[in-house]
Amino acid sequence: MRTTRTISSGRKRGAARTAKTSRAATALVALSVLALTGCGGDNDGGSGTPDRATGSDSAPSVRLPKLNGEKIEVAAVWTGPEQENFTKVLKEFEKRTGATVTFVPAQDPIVNFLGTKIAGGSPPDVAMLPQVGAIQQAVAQKWAKPAGPEARAELAKNYAKGWQDLGSVDGTAYGVYFKAANKSLIWYNNAVFENAGATEPKTWKDFLTTAETISASGVTPVSVGGADGWTLTDWFENVYLSQAGPEKYDQLAKHEIKWTDPSVKQALTSLAELFGKPSLIAGGADGALQTEFPKSVTQTFTGGDQPKAAMVFEGDFVTINIAGTEAKIGTDAKVFPFPAVGAQPPVVTGGDAAVALKDSKGAQALLTFLASPDAAKIWAESGGFISPNKSLDVSAYPNDVQRDIAKALIAAGDDFRFDMSDQMPQSFGGTPGKGEWKALQDFLKNPKDIAGTQARLEADAAKAYKS
Image (cartoon, rainbow, N blue to C red; front, side, top):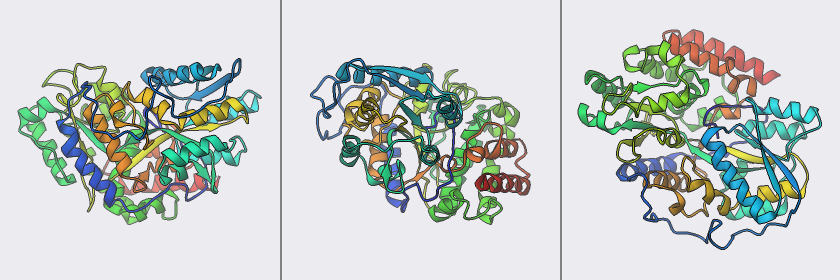
């Protein structure tokens, strides 16, 4: 999952499993009722109904081979708390198998990093790939090895077909989506909302009105991490999916329609209603373009009822950064679904998939483990994590907010849209300072130039899809 970056690569079409969004939208609306009453840090066991015992403190749900003495390398772009929590998962795998697992910090973009490793004859055994396109490119380059029978059995048992399809290329399973993201959420400072008399908006129009209300109370309403271009692609994707609809979303993701299409103009025009008012954005456009994602979160939840911003948009992984403040999730920090710009609120997801790059017993065993609820439970208990594994008991999550986000994701089944930029060629949808990232950063700086933004997006997209 792209939590601190986006990397996109590959050119094959039709990878993302898509369907109508109504059921998923309903789940997110239910989330706004359930999650906002949840209190952070409770351990009441939740309201989940476990399919079977999970985790290292109970009977294992999956059998793993003995790998005494085998050395396994796993590459991922995760750093900080994400790396620490994933390392806990790897330690449990070591304990069960006798293997020694080394975490290899990957550079961004990970596909380029892996290409260098492979060219040098030293690929890692497994790589955590943050998008559909990267899996497709790894297969096209003959880097990736198909998932073995044990991993496929876990996938069939624990994952909805949509998530299985996302990890497959031409009907063959390669990727195990271990970490997912609900990327259609807006988090807010509850004290600021209460002081301003603001309520949770349901529509984009209401969202802008709420922002004006908060601004009038003396607090800048919205924090934008514009230094990280991927956050801006997420803003666009949520507006576009809700306004243009899922069919257009799929077409744009595959470049079957151009970025000069009227639907793109409409979405950028709506987004400009926010970006075009510097008073509504912490630090204005210049400040936002110097604000990295983690800071965009922490500045929303520090300073008591006088923070630098009242709201911040991004996925469930925001909880990792909130945990670094004094705010308590569910009381001080609350969340509502991304408002409906069109007929339905959007449901955009992301995720990180484990892919074997070596045809070894150890690599396949790790894929099998990561496809089990046992592995998911370990990270879920630490927070900042949502699993697409439907067999994971939601009581593993540390608070009601995360439980309800996880339940909404699972309830969506196959009815979701995967992050658009993660389906696109890396040079367009996932490279800092280039393509969509750069075009949307320029748009944030000058949101009046909608036609120019469309022209740049189309020119870069056309070039990327031809290469």
